[in-house]
Structure formats: C-alpha cells, structure tokens
Image (cartoon, rainbow, N blue to C red; front, side, top):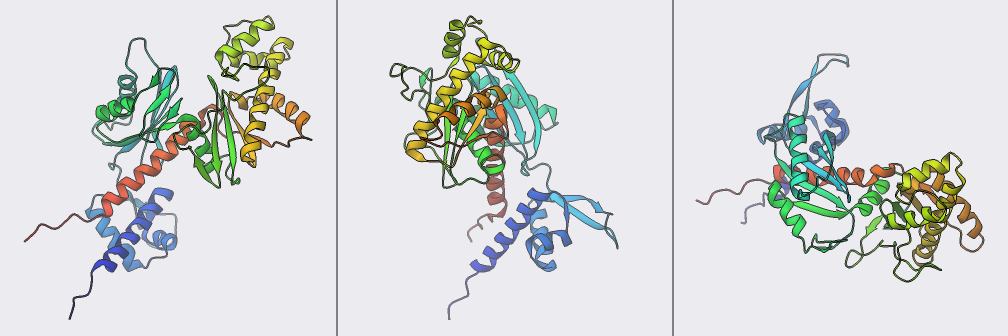
Amino acid sequence: MSRPLAGPQGLLRTLNGRAILEALAASGPQTRAELMARTGLSRTAVTQVLRMLEAAGAVAAAGVDRDTRGPAAGRVALHPRLGFAAAVHVDHHAAHVVLVDPSGAVRAEEHGDFPPNVDRVAHIVALIERCRRGVRAAKEAIHLAVVGVPGIVTADGGIRDDLGPDGGAFRSALAAALGCPVRIENDVNLAALAELTSGAGGDLSSFALLLLDDGLGAGIVIDGTLHRGFSGVAGEVMYLPQTPLPIGAPVVSDAVVGDLALGVGRDADAPLAEHLEAAARGDEAASRIIAEIGRRIVLVAGSVGLVLDPEAFILSGEAAHPALVAAVDRVAGEYAAQLPLRFRVSSFGPEAPLIGAISEAGSALRSMLFSRILTPAPRAGR
C-alpha cells in the first residue's frame, strides 16, 4: 500500500501563510480575529500559521488592541527587519531614490542632481545609503531595485538612450554595487503602470499615456496590460512623422522648445516650465509656443489612435500643466468630427514614473520575501 502524499497539507499551509502575509502587508498590524475576518481562516489555522511565520522571523508582536470591547487582544505585524526594495527614477539630470518596505510604504527618500564627473551608479548607490541612514537601517538588506530610466529598455535590461546602447552594463554595475537583483524599466512605462493601478487609467481597459519631459514618450496599455513591444520600442512616439517637420525630427524636445521660443521672441534657453507659467499668466508669445506644442501632441495622439484606438489618452509630466491641457483640448476639438480623441490628466503629474517604480518595487519585494519565507528548507539527506 502506497503512503499518502504530504504535499496537499504543505500546499494548504503555504496558501494560508501567503493569505496572512498579504493581509498584514495590505492593512498593517492586526489581531487574530481581524485576520480570521480578512482571510476566512479558522482561529486554529490562523494560530498555527502565525506560529510558523513567527518562527521564520516573518512576523512580530505589534502591541495590543484596546479599542474593542473585551480583553485586550495582541496584534501582529510584518517583522520590521524584513528589509527593503529601492525604487529609483533617473532622468538626464538627477536621480530620485525611495526605500519601500514589504507593505509598500515609503520609508525614506532622497533626491540629488548628478554631480559632474561622477558615475551614475555611484551616485544612485550613495543616495540609497543616505536613505538607509535616514531610517537607521544601515544593516537592513536591500533585496531588489526597480529603476526607471529614459530611453528604450530591452528585454534583457539593456538601455538605448542618447549615449547609445549599453548592453545591460548599467544594470550589471548597479546590481554588483548593491548586491541584489536590479530591474530596469522605461520611465514612461512605469508612469503608465502607476496610472493603471491607482490613477487616471484605473477604470480603462486600454489607454496611451503621453509623458512630456525632456521629450515626448508614450506608455501603452492594452486590455489592462502594459505593452512594451518585441524589442522595447513600443511608445517611442517622439519621432512620428508630422507635416511640415522633416522625417526623423523630434516632435517635442528641449531643442524644439528653444526653437519655438526663438521664433516668438522669448528666451531660447528658458525651460518649458517657464513658458507654461507665462502662458498661464496670459503672455501672448508664450501662449503661441504652448499652442504649437499642443497641436503636435494631438497629432501624435491621432496617429496612435488610428492604429490602437485606445479608450483615452492620459497627459502626464509637463503635458499635465493646465495651460497645455487647455491647448490640447482646443486642438482636439477642431479634429473631433474626423477623429474623436478623449484626454485625461494624470493623477500623479511629474511624479508618475517614481510612483510606478514604488508600486512595482513593493510588489516585487513582497513576492520575493513571501516566497522565500514560505518555501521550506530542503531536509538534509540521511
């Protein structure tokens, strides 16, 4: 007679353990009764799983509940020393670093311009170390990092930007310096994920996010899933052909803004943000610049719309500025009879890529830690 398999019982314990860990991550410290209500598990199951998680160093006592009637009940929470994930947003000028705990909460934050002649990796690592000192967690592990960067990101984590393809050198160097896995993602794609999970795209099955920063990029969501494309090129809309622009000319960039400013007698070296504020105050020359940028954004949206037909376009970055939103709406109204286009404003503005990195880092950290905690160590052979 064959012996019964032990797998199902172990699988059940693992599923119950994950349910409790997810509940603690989502809602913070809870009593056994609260965990029973959230997970549907019996008191015995909750008690057994908590005993297992405590032995594994995954949970710890977190005070008592004195708000409910009856005897005070002890609360448990995720162990405060489980470690962190780093969420990083890199642009052409600076790096923004956030430490995220397994609950997804931001524990520390640092921002710093890239100093001249300092390697990007060294600068990011220094910012992460400052974050760790800020929460007195210099000895806590950084388990992984999610980094949003401008440029095309290939499936193997390589970056193609203004300096050309790096073959994954940036990711490899940062992983070696941090001693943990590093995931590289296009910053506009992270912005789209932020809007999909908790922003303006949460009720849409498909949308295209148009983020204007140093240039114009798109993050494309189809049927609730981010579309990166075969080689990571999906969403590179800055060079879509537009009459009368020559083929290969950028639709919007810092250089384009400078040229437009020069044409109306404004400072060619002023950033777009300055022209946006001037237009909002009623400056006629600045309003002409913003009107032309709005026209170009609508034409990009029209090209994308004819191919993908998304439910809406989400304006992000500096495209979410009220002056530019108004310009886009005016131009879109002129084309409405031929091609109706719906526009929404980002819930997060310029912070959208970092918000996306934080969400992805927290989710990846939970998946890594919970799998590690709930995977039993192999037994030594007899």
